[in-house]
Image (cartoon, rainbow, N blue to C red; front, side):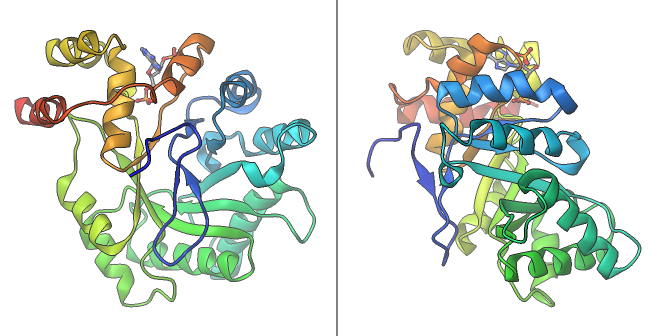
Length: 277
Ligand code: A2P
């Protein structure tokens, strides 16, 4: 395998759409609040932004795409959004998804996002099916280059098989870090060619985790920070990793994870952290 770099990508099985392995999460950065961090991320070399209807920053992502159009070609940027609720009918649910694409990509018929996810399985089986139908329609129309799910367990993924025209989903985005390894669903995704995306790779900044002695020892060994070790851990697992920060130095630091490699001993030690819980 070629060494990982900031421009490394992965593609879901049977697709040719490259997903940058490092993405920038936009959760808890509503409205204009996302702009400075997203600009800093693009300046630091990130080319993948992770938004959602719930984050209330799709329109700002759209404005940003417009703003940078002269310096970074649209084809070099990867945008994700997500929808977790239905609209009251299949047509209205589809319309809500289309509204997202338009907020990000403008009103023209050629607008698209790279990835559209069902945000959560929690709406129930009927909602899951209706949302997937809406995303399949967007996919068929080219308005979402890839479609997938988030927070899905094996049972939700298996349930989709019965009705999905697009199966497997291209992506499953779940909470992943040493204290939340979700081994069963990760294995299922790997076995089926579903790209695994890791949200909250920094354990949402939890102090007792970022200051854990095992993590600290590994960070010191590589002259890196605990956050950099956690991001590198996810990358070496083969996951797409989506750290977030509103702090410019951390945004840069979190992208500086390609000049070192965790060894087998480090990975085993980090894997072992889940057992402590
Ligand atoms: P901040 O936004 O104030 O920089 P996660 O990506 O797991 O959701 O974690 C996000 C949290 O981790 C945020 O609170 C963020 O704080 C913090 N964080 C991001 N990068 C770093 C870093 N390099 N070192 C320490 N904390 C970080």
